[in-house]
Image 1 (tube, rainbow, N blue to C red):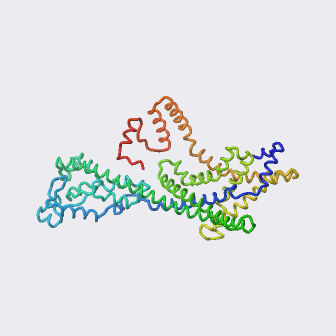
Image 2 (cartoon, one colour):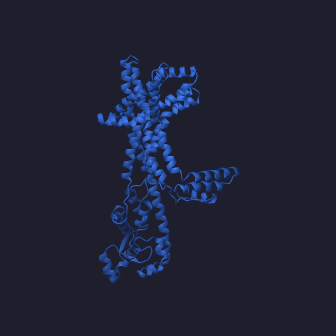
Image 3 (cartoon, rainbow, N blue to C red):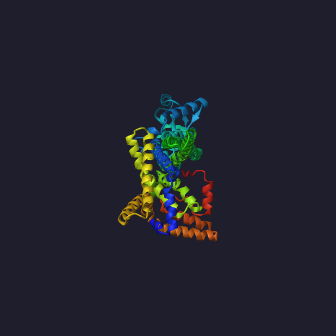
Length: 484
């Protein structure tokens, strides 16, 4: 970076002129960094809350009551007997009565074949096993789906005791087991059992898919509002202080200062809403990923850091790419912004501890830290350009500049460490898969493209749903698959 300062005189003078200018707030990106950190921390808290909201028990044993509904089962029997004078078991064909007393009076020792009970067509244990990893359904959502009208059938106690956690398909296919329990299905009953299972399975998936979409939108909106509030207050506090100082110094009038403060707060709030909601949804969606690499990224809050870095450095790189600033100017701006990013989190933490007012303390700490950091950085850069410095003093300042620049590289080294650690084993797979996909694309070989993509999916621990074009078409048409 500092090699640029040893070039011809005109280049060095240009840099000195840039540094001698009064630093502007938007150049070091402190408002954006502060708002980004606030939104990222807000999203982290929202994701933790989402993890509690959508948590599932570790085992089904001892937790059946979370998914069973006695009221739904009683209501199913009540409605059926009110609507029908003669109720029969749909699978055995035996006549059913509502109470145990009536069953014993009418059928004696054979009363269990005739006492009506409500059965979950798709067993609760199976529903638990299929949904325990679902990140966007609560136990209440699952309970409502499991106890929906489509998943409850009124059968005999004999059939219900025999079935337990078996599926209808298993009961129909295992004749020996049924006969060992003294249960006999009619031919029509076997067909009806299979049909009921398919109907209930589709209904449950429909219920859960609908509730997951609603929960995702609701969680994102709430997290977005929290992110907008935290980012907005942070920016308003920082901008408000700076604009008050500008008015006192005669650099702005009151109306201009108010307008600038409102504008900064509004932009930060909008950014905070998008970051807060988006990062919460992303983090929680990936929290149960089968890929350890992705889970590590989420745990380390890497997505939020990347987004903040892009927000901060994007404008500088755009100006450099369009030729609006020189390479030296670009490096100086990136150094200032990078050092702000490296120190902002610590500055906000110190400010919050010294001024224990939610958000405001952190915002003031961020502003003070940003001013001190940028002032120190710009002072070092400016001093380095003074040719009258003694040789030893110049070497000391260069060491100080390099130490400051090293801090700005911390974020890049962190990302490189993640790439080195978690992509090391994936690199050969990615190279081979992407190469084969490129040749398949040039040859018009769709199956080859799918095969290459599947290699990457397997390497990251994902699930393969199709292996060729025909299976892909079937996948698109299959409503029973829920990739969420």
